[in-house]
Amino acid sequence: MSLSPNQNAALLPGSALSGAPLTLGVMGGGQLGRMFVHAAQAMGYATAVLDPDPTSPAGLVSHHHIQSGYTDTDGLAQLAACCAAITTEFENVPAEALRTLATQRRVAPGAAAVAIAQDRAAEKAHFGRCGVACAPYAELHSVSDVQHVPDDLLPGILKTARMGYDGKGQVRVADRAALGRAWADLGQVPCVLEKMLPLALECSVIVARGADGAMVNFPVQRNLHREGILAVTEIFEGNLPAPLAAQAVADARAVAQGLDYVGVLCVEFFVLADGRLVVNEIAPRPHNSGHYTQNACDLSQFDLQVRTLAGLPLTPPRQHSPAIMLNLLGDLWGRAAPDALPDWAAVLALPGTHLHLYGKQQARPGRKMGHLNVTGATIAQVHAVALQAAAILGIEEF
Ligand code: ATP
Ligand code: MG
Image (cartoon, rainbow, N blue to C red):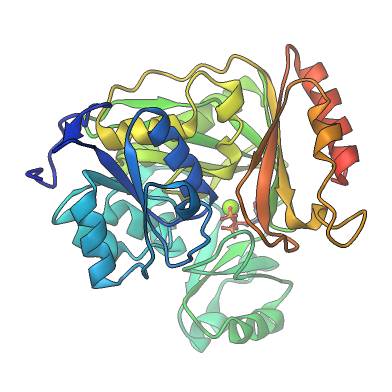
């Protein structure tokens, strides 16, 4: 294949190379990769997934599954050989691997943007450069830093700078003694201490940006987290006061622009008790809070991921139905009897329910097994059905 790595030319759907359909690749085989694969295949692309797990959700449905580690030279060479362009589905893919791939193929988002999203300290510095407010914080690298963080940051949340997700790698600390213990428990790795803020609510914005700088966004999603894991997302006209929603969209676009980002980016925010908006973190990929777009919008976040990667036009996505998304965690399995599935038949008997399961064989507490999108004519209807579904499944009322 004679594609130069930074070529922005469109990789047109349906085009073939030596008789084989063009292949789009993804680093990581989790549920986000699986839904990327589905969207790419719907447009006629072949897909390749690199993930060491032979039963990875995306690997199971992809044309090609390269079962290697993310830094394995042979695996990366195989991926580059079979793909015209490569994206990523989780931020902990080593930026170095993306850099290696980018010497041979189009890679989006780029290593530099992913490297910033991988590191909470770099991420916060980026917010500062973009003029977007985040929680007050300090970086911790040494025992001396622990002793000298300003009192004002306590009580706070200690977060490892790297590799955290779903509330993992985080400890709430009441005072300096607890901070010292928590930092030791986290292995004295580089961390940030964030001031514990009084949250009124949480929300997120997903933007898609092309290599030509064109940018579109989804409406602001209102998110409910439980035990550090997203539980429910609600998206309807008026779910947030209009000025706040406009601010969140403007901030998200500024963050993407500042990264010269190519791909789908999620920006998570806190709305504080006093009404202020502060940015929490970014995810350089589609996001759990955007799964409702599969059924409630004319283009899903995964469709836009495919378009940005392939260099296809971006049109503003339109939400055609109010929606609520319920995350389906492994806790819901085995409730009625040890091997019992959740009562899908009862849930699917409700109007406007769309079930998405990720093909994971083993249900474990806290493990994301799937999600349920509920759509309907009005938010009142959607809310009523979502509550019925939650009651059937054993999800706590919201
Ligand atoms: P994920 O990657 O799944 O979004 P994460 O592990 O990166 O999660 P964060 O988003 O940093 O974690 O935090 C998880 C949750 O903890 C937040 O959604 C919020 O509910 C709470 N939280 C985090 N930081 C703060 C803070 N400074 N003040 C108050 N609550 C916070
Ligand atoms: Mg988060």
